[in-house]
Length: 410
Image 1 (tube, helix red, strand yellow):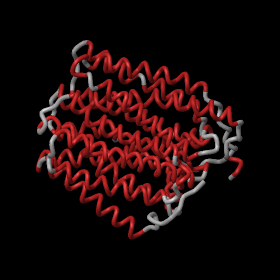
Image 2 (cartoon, helix red, strand yellow):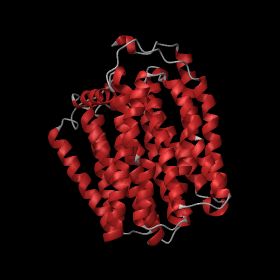
Image 3 (cartoon, one colour):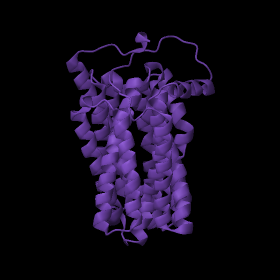
Image 4 (tube, one colour):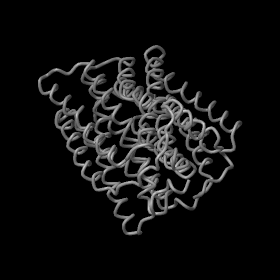
């Protein structure tokens, strides 16, 4: 097992490598934040699609995670993660450039938006577990702090991108799409400067499905990993789905808002997430009952959805999004830390891909489900039913696992 661990480096070298890693991370997630608002704006505001069509569009953006996140984790476990990530940066710049070219000729259409979502989602599904696999190599001996800082910067980058995309009503989509591509290409320079990971020892690899099954079996054997992965899938279905497919329609139909108002609720959410993540970066080693914090955070989020269903004033809606974001920051940092600490190096990328698939794979299911509920029964039901579903899942986790009481330390 020890032969699979990265070669220890001097503290200064680790610090420099981690700074470069964070630079590449930011260059990816600022464009992702732009895409998050811009894609929804194009579907709901510019094309004025109904709830079901907006849900389908979100499914197109997120569905590739179901197919490609496990494959991306497997490829990263077997290959050179740095070189793979470099290629993904170049590929990720292509979809916004193509969409910008079509928009400049006045050719925006719903099928084109679906194609964009499928392409961008597929490339992102390969990149996420690859980047996670590189994190322990540059963490510098404090993995919990590195996870919290990486998570905080990830969300901060998205917040910057969301703020930029809030100007879509004023400046249009074209400059924002070109900025997406330029930032992703600039981030390739940071990835190129990362140190080479230690080569994998020679091995005879089993088939794809057997390797994926081996990763799932590794998670199932752990008292800490399977509850976290299951909760994360529930977050994707019951929280990410309503956030992406229902809240933009609530802003449009109930609060009569546009791109700026969609951006405001996103800014409030991600501001809370960033504050929570930075707080845990400073307090990373003071906590050991990380599972308890995850359960508490997802429980509060269910209450947030119930409050949103009451259609409070828009300012209160933003405050609820901020509190929801605080809980998301706790869930993301502590859930990822549990997996990074507990997962064996030989399976780390695959297990992190399963973690991300909870959001990326559960999200399309939730977007389709809640978008359909919203179209048939209205926004109130599309917020209340996911809250109820999450409460039932939390009760099951608490009954079947020791996540509430178990400690996780490096």
